[in-house]
Amino acid sequence: AGMMEEGETPLEVARRELLEETGLTLKHAELVAHYFIGPGGCSDQVYLYLAEVEDATQPLGVHGLVEEGEDIQATWVPLSEALRLVDDRRIQDAKTLLGLSILDRKLKSGKGFEV
Image 1 (spheres, rainbow, N blue to C red):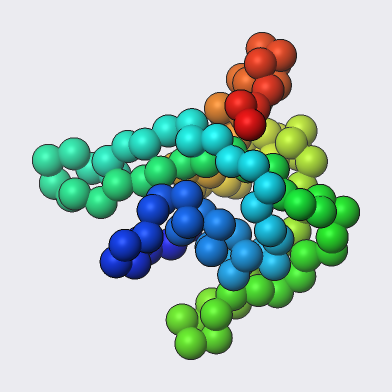
Image 2 (image 1 turned 90 degrees about the vertical axis):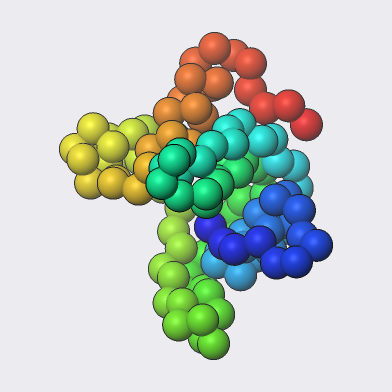
């Protein structure tokens, strides 16, 4: 998640934030949702991508920009475990809930990603 800078596209933000917060490089991305956080009360928008990274075997670790006060522990979690965390109400972030739901639905339908 990140703020869009002047002249930056949503996909460029996704690419930048992925690198800053996980150390991973974007290979392919599919825009799966674009929505307002609170229509009528807030003009902030979310562009939600499902993405494939260049090297999914890369260990993660602590990332983020020190100047932004970020201290992000990135870790790999199997989809089944992430969905269990959703069911246990341990994941409470709306964009994460939506992203996991869309990913699960796409994989179950056999449609996969558009690249």
